Image 1 (tube, rainbow, N blue to C red):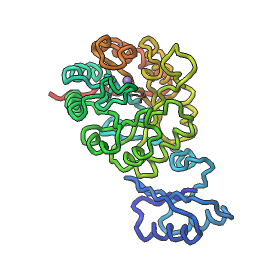
Image 2: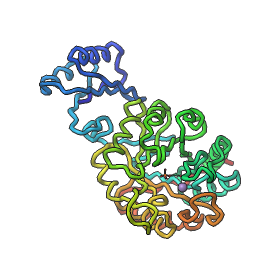
Image 3: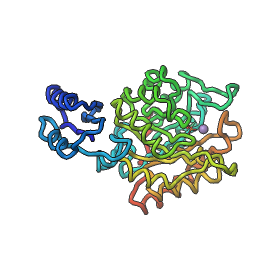
Length: 348
Ligand code: PEP
Ligand code: MN
């Protein structure tokens, strides 16, 4: 079960709750978020009904929720309303307005980012994506520009008036990456890097958690639980395709996972049709399908010259491809009661 404390709960009230948990030989997982403190009660109490009533009457307790799932704090049972993850003024994941993240797979140069950021923000994207630390299958492939790449991202996004999402690969780099980015991306290959999950759980930046290459829905939500229980409640899930037997597409984009997961968790869910298919021609149709199916946003790879991209050129949209996609997306979003972001006001 979980115990939701009232906002601004006093230390003594929290101690009252944890003391009762210890007295009952159960263990407590206290998760202090920016808005509220939540206590997870772990163990198998003999009489659940009596226990629920006992906790509900303690000072500072707002509600006590029995949870049947293995993941607790991220479950719909813990919170019936959908979470809106606020990135900064006017930019959020999970509200009526979709979040649209666009940009290259890898940060390659200042010029590449300036050109891309200006074009994607003009077309209506509200978050610039790009990897400065790249998880590559081959150790000989381009590994990213590191901190220099983070600077290019920040500068280009600020000039375009949009936010930044970028991947952090290593727990030792969380602080560095968080200095430059608005959203910390955990890549598919790291979905079960529990040390990294705990580390971003302590960061004061929203986390974009991609589904692992062969992860079940349950494993994905348990990974989100790691971040949540470590104190970071601003988590966005991203379906990016899973490994299948068929090499016709790079991955098998599991669009059914979007409404499925939205029924299991209160967290927002976005879709990555670029890694989800690996095929440029499939990116626009799958983006439209994702939004029609209720996704809270998209993350799309866009490059000024995909043929020359350091990574993932074959799945990258050109700048005009992306602008066209955004135009086609608007009526689909409207049909399901959502809106595209308002175009950003670029800095002078
Ligand atoms: C990426 O978004 O650049 C990336 C590497 O994606 P994934 O972790 O989904 O493969
Ligand atoms: Mn990529």
